[in-house]
Length: 358
Ligand code: PEP
Ligand code: MN
Image (cartoon, rainbow, N blue to C red; front, side, top):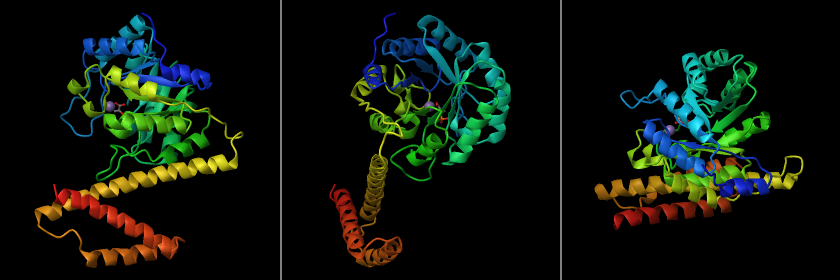
């Protein structure tokens, strides 16, 4: 079968960045679903096909994967398309089964990485075996726990290890399913520079619309590749359907991504590093503001239901006093605090007004 070289690969070659491109469905469902998705991804130039055959679900009673049958389909895809294949493992018996079917890459999921006993059990099963391993970040934003898992796998003698950044669990409403908290991954990247850092924008974003901007951000931060959930018919997917892309939508995203030349730490000036830091903080600030406005909109809905006025100036004065005091203790000037808090408040009122007048 003819392989089309994606824009991403062409561009990465021209900038001499060797990007790993992994894609595939969240879960293996049927042989036909796997084959159809795989053939389309192969034609886009994907080099690592992913699919989960054992699915760790937060709540019981949901689809928990097809098990060993899925490994058989993965091996068939490997043989028929030449793509390398990857699946998730959480126990020693998963490792043994996956290796029986010649799976090239095993990934440790976020829920498993958080448990050192489980990671050690996997590491022991990997000793002396020839396979590559990807370690997703743990659910909680703890760089030491993530690095500890990477280290256990390394100490088991695994030669090719990757870190996958898929974002961190959070309580309450957030624009992302698993907010990235980029600084955590950047710390791991800095402390373990030999381990490629791959971004999984699908689990971070939790919705299709977030995949392109999150992927771009990862590339801008110098990540070494992407792992994206792609399904031939996402609406019918048995898990994670709102974040899976069709192969066509995935291609459009790949073509839109801009790959900038990477400057190594040594080459880039101190000023560049600081500017990158500022850019990251600015981006985080905007996301936080957007999140705040989302909450303001919800408050607007409650006020509308209860026929309460938008502006309750007593409450705002109280908040303002507290925030100005806190801001001053952080070294921010009075004038600045006054201006910025006033305009944030005004923007919240505007969002609430929109709800009221709907
Ligand atoms: C997955 O990749 O489908 C998965 C379950 O991921 P995570 O461990 O990141 O939730
Ligand atoms: Mn998934």
